[in-house]
Image (cartoon, rainbow, N blue to C red; front, side):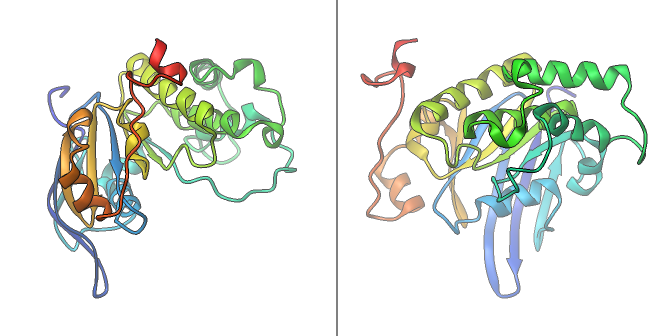
Length: 259
């Protein structure tokens, strides 16, 4: 099973009425990879994630996720999902631990109390993201980077095989972004899971991920991150007026350069 890919798109089109959101997508993601889908706003990145999650159906072609259809796999808890950050009431009385526990309650019949296995999973997930010492803090009082780590812990508490993240670094400053992407690398290795995330920032994520998929309705590149930053690929993905600042081991002014 481990040799089988985590995600396979074969000749996938996705249309909303007459509008073609994705066209002729062929994409295979191996198990255990950290992959980022990059592209401009409106290029179909979130639509691709929603297709993996089974939220939208292909107009043509086929999608396989963890050896099954997205509609079969998603309810099983084998996929963890972190959507884009949305507005919420920061005064709502919920602790960081309560937020993580939501993932375990979602797998239990309504009204059922958590068991010891649930509590162990919650603790382990908080520990993985470095937030065990903040578990009793009010969620709304945490910084943006801390809240994002708690939401990652919630996704991990369901013990998924595949983690899906939609623009996870939105709203984070450069230092918090750097820390966050290092965290994803650690999670991938510690949990041995596949991570697929969406980003518009090709220059930053290219220094952290294994593979990049460049998407603007069509898939213009899928392969090693270090090979994607050619003028032709950038032009076809983002248009002719795109400049890319690369954040990698050659940086001289960031912590990532000196590890």
